[in-house]
Image (tube, rainbow, N blue to C red):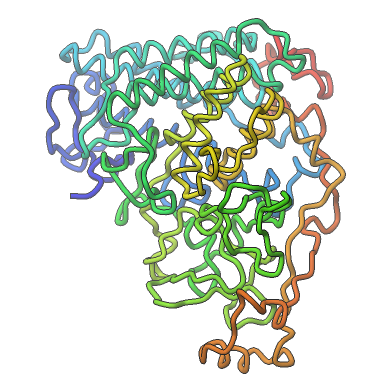
Length: 581
């Protein structure tokens, strides 16, 4: 049976206890909204259903999601980086104080209510531990979503009641981080190391530890410590990520052997998935497949996550060398040949084999005027996480799970923190492991294309590149640009793509298709005979102009008006709150 654990109360959700999993369905219960609140905390099944609803409200998901609330911190960040094109107030220096509104206090209040009521509920201690551990994690996760954007926010740890003083000031960022880490530590102490397949998607001890490692990695980075003078932050990040990695590996986590298809292995069979949000058709679905696939193989959506030329050129060759490195073997007239295998798993180019809708031998054409409608604006499409078997009418009701944290990220988080504390050797080991899994050739000395003797600075660049490749279109690139304060490197530039024109056969596409089908066209050796790839700007009217105050966003006016105790963030009009404290 597939995906029995859903987060939506209107779906079939098994009632979970720590000692036994029953097949009780939420649809067998009355509407929770019609049940007196007190009854929820007398029935573990209802309390679990209450928690399930909070998973929906709190957990991240695919960028485009049609059957549940807007996901938190999802994969829709590619246009806020150099991965894909797309306009945006943030990239063009046009944010206002009302542009960024991430305010999770309704969900936090419900989590606080659960945390307040469960200890006195007539449940077994095991059930209390399980419910409490999951709720503590979700609260920490939501606070981190806000703190990573605003710095310190009001810390509300009890369910506020009408008639009480609801106006809470912002806590220092350091106080918020301390609370997030405490909640994650407390959650990890209460959570199991794994769930059975029916409940995969619930948070485990290892997932809580992995998020702790991510938080501390960000807190050590330049966004929160611009001068890199804070004592012990990188060491704390290294310790936390090593502990998370050791725990996850101890209880069965490992890199999946197939990078391209790891998104389509579900349940405990996916040894790499650490923190996931589950989807299923029928039930909770998303439309990311439709948004990313070309329009002729999709339905009602198109244009998402189209790779930039910089993203295409970032991938090394199969020997691990950059395309600009001497001896790399790069052929600009057949740029797809002998590349890092992650290139072909992530990007579809003009002439690529992409067997969408189960069409054997289907070739993706990206040139202007091709018979495939809804062309790409960059000359490329994203392949990552796209289920080729879906028919067009299935693409907007996809059931592919979102993986927020993979073991690969925990490994890279550890490698980065280790490098910053002087242990560059550990970073080498991690990157070699990921490149080996990717299919890059080991080369002499099993270097996988990495230069020997890298300094801390050189290894830092290698780590950021590896993250860019491994986690492309997973929402991580924008996070990395923010936390390491690298957006400034993009300022004054415009993202680029290809405008591809058919020049062979006099531009007659039907003649070209016929010749290609007959086998007389070899793009690997004669691509430029048939096509011209002109470099174009994707940012048509603006250059990138990320402003320094954007690293910590303004609190929107609606919240300032409701709560006079809130201070605006420094760097914004009237701002007095220092997010670095």
